[in-house]
Length: 507
Image (tube, rainbow, N blue to C red):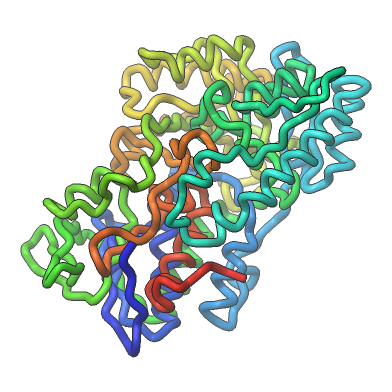
């Protein structure tokens, strides 16, 4: 990684207006630099978009906010108005309701280990809550070991240390003196949870990020831990409101946005990035370039320059995508309805084979996440409800297959919403092609957060590159995908540019 400390004001070109890129832009502008954001589409936000029709409004990207402290930090560091003065955040409680294959249901309180343990004991039987609670203690150990290097610090030059060491603790084997370490998340479920429903609960956190629990490392245990330890939040008006607030903070800090401006190349001069070349032939000169683009796009922009060379993090291959079905329903949202319900697949193995097998196919009855926000701003009146269904699909999933699968999502969702079809006014299907169009990611792939172990397969490349003055930001670079991680990538890139290679992350 090559980086320079900035002395005085510098011109900085940011490619893309995703949330991570805008987070970097706001921080760099506050540090006194002249920042221009070039976005090929007509709006900001990347995957954080909104669909509106007939008085209904839906998030088409993320629907819930983990680790809001990341965004609170951005607003504190970039202006006098805190995050809560710009958007209304609401803690979701329960954090989720789960409908398991056997029909058992459980609602899990938000950010309460004791409450979760009690709910699982009551719904799944004696011992279930205790086993899950014990698992969370071990997951916390993995979190404590990886939090700084995988979220708060630039990627270590010796990243192989993270790739080779499994941070999830080994457990003593019964009646034996030696210990045994789980290699995958699925092994954690089988060895430690002892209940198919608890295993489904565990594995659903990996699946939600497009990860196969049978191959995802045991360190993926940090995913449910983060949710249980720090809670889940909703932004009133939808997560698009968060993107709007970050965009407006950038404008307040005098960041310039150029929409409909497609960058075709990173301009180089004297062996370093010197600006960007646009589709219309113009060049935007800059001392630093920050690219918030997918890996394939970065390769095209850098031309013959090997910005990712041998020895760099391999990066995640075969990323999954997401199919989303937006439902406009007649009849208001019933009181006490959970914001999020996860309806688990009846045949978990068949679902995983369909998604991650040699020839990806339609899952027969996929795991479906049902979002039902308690937000009057999303509907024309109290007599209607806006619901979002989503399921993981292979990247590049075709429109015809997606339309067929959309019907299956609605059928599965009926287990969570009785009488759903009778209430349906209309629906809209959002496919991987829509994600690809909005983000530029090939096949509409959605990046997962970085995870330790697994030989580095689930690490993302460092924010610095082998071309001096060129940095990367957003879900396809360290620390990976998700709103919280994207926000941290913006902080890391700003730190590396302002403070130089000695920057070691937030304290």
